[in-house]
Image 1 (tube, rainbow, N blue to C red):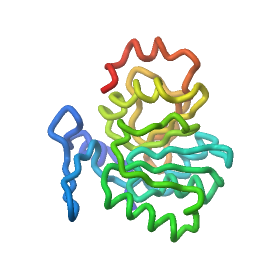
Image 2: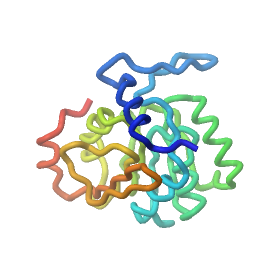
Image 3: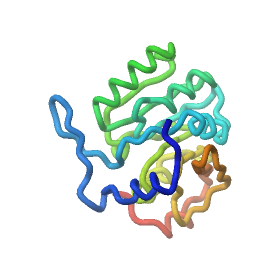
Image 4: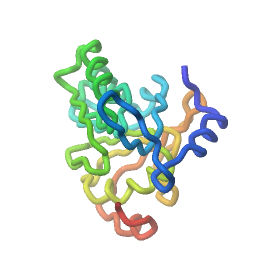
Length: 196
């Protein structure tokens, strides 16, 4: 089981992000640019993220950089929510679809191979992710531009820097942060870099 620890966080900080050469994942047919390394969110942290966001069957949960699909699958399985997992790596998307089938939630979840910076996130009522700090900061302008007011955002381990979370909890040594998109995002955007 992966635990959050200062050592893991240090390793994540040392890995390259969008400002540095990207990490690449070799698949059978192509070379894929990865914004964040694949590190699984522990199941108890997944549960805490969904609880903190108050997910219900009325929600559409988007999991950015979905990995093996565990957040989207848990949202569907445990809450009856619709969920969309987005990952740039085709191997992770295949794995997510297999896991959704095993969990019996294929009617509630969809997995898409795409760079989440290019994806349409406007239907989300909850957005969840475990990304590097610099990716969070780069993603924030897009989230505030396309998400409707009231959409909840939950992040494992890293926040947005200047935009302070409404809530932060620690679960098994891991931090989980919650924000709600406000009606007026001008002040938040004024202190963040431009959208890519």
